[in-house]
Length: 414
Ligand SMILES: Cc1cc2nc3c(=O)[nH]c(=O)nc-3n(C[C@H](O)[C@H](O)[C@H](O)COP(=O)(O)OP(=O)(O)OC[C@H]3O[C@@H](n4cnc5c(N)ncnc54)[C@H](O)[C@@H]3O)c2cc1C
Image (cartoon, rainbow, N blue to C red):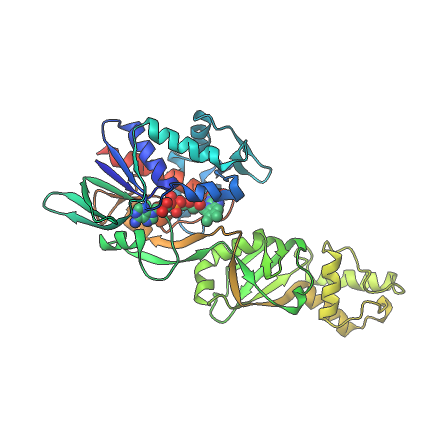
């Protein structure tokens, strides 16, 4: 018998794959909560961003701050195209949004949950809920795994898979403790995909403002000097900053930002498409040809008007001052604020409650052809319990479908 611990997308997909490939081997899936697939149900704001319309593994792996290298071969074996075919074969039509995210055409995650549950049921996967696994041991004499369940009962099996997801609350517990107990190393788990808290005066009154293209750089004495840079849309919120560029920076910098306790400076270039010299020339030319106009009426720099006014406030230039009266000192201050505003960040908040875990079972200790442990034969892993995480866009679920598929095949191969 194969036991799968964890009724999330990775556990379900592995159990389904194993039964599909080898219907003679019983598969038991244990879930500690009353309901399975809870995250799938709430995912993508209830729509479930099931994967991403990217079919080149070399491109796909660039979306994984951790695990990309290891997933390269895995995506050749089971990629987004395979995921899409699988769900469509289950009667769930999918659609691609212009940015590449794939959703069920119904825009309802319920269809994804039902497809997984129906497939598992039809293939004879036994699903037991309210059945948490408290401990997991291997007996070298019988070559069996022994599981102790939360209700005190026990069971044994020849192969076991840990698909218990991520967790970032202090200490090693849950699936991480089960894996560590069998000799695995756990990369310290910290959150990824979060937004930044900032009360910088520049942001006062700007909540709701979207800057379409901004370059942001995280700086601080505890942070690496290179690498923590992103360019893209940024959204000002009531608590600080959000938007795609912020989420990407939070993912790529997850570990470094955690070590800095989420206190750092965010250097913002609001006009990343123009060099500083060209921007200075634009300001000079604009001042010369619009000398009698007020400074609140600025050149077209591609930034929202409210932001322009906030930047003028930041550098103490009265909005009713005329362009002809803008001295070199003020122009330099304006230039500095446009290209290198320093905003202080003092914490993080969840992105619409959607977050993933950076950290987990060390990848070197897992064979990515089968997802079998290199430390304890017969033990398999899939999903977020591994030190794998992607940016937003359906990449996290794709990681689960891919590793779940490989683990499902791996468990029935030998
Ligand atoms: C609000 C939200 C929205 C999201 N939206 C998206 C999205 O649209 N697209 C995307 O790609 N990603 C999204 N994600 C990320 C995605 O949900 C996760 O990456 C994914 O669910 C991980 O799957 P998993 O199977 O590894 O773990 P999980 O989904 O966490 O499932 C693990 C299961 O194991 C169970 N378990 C844990 N310990 C035990 C134990 N000891 N015994 C028995 N059972 C146990 C848990 O109860 C849980 O049901 C979202 C995440 C959140 C929080």
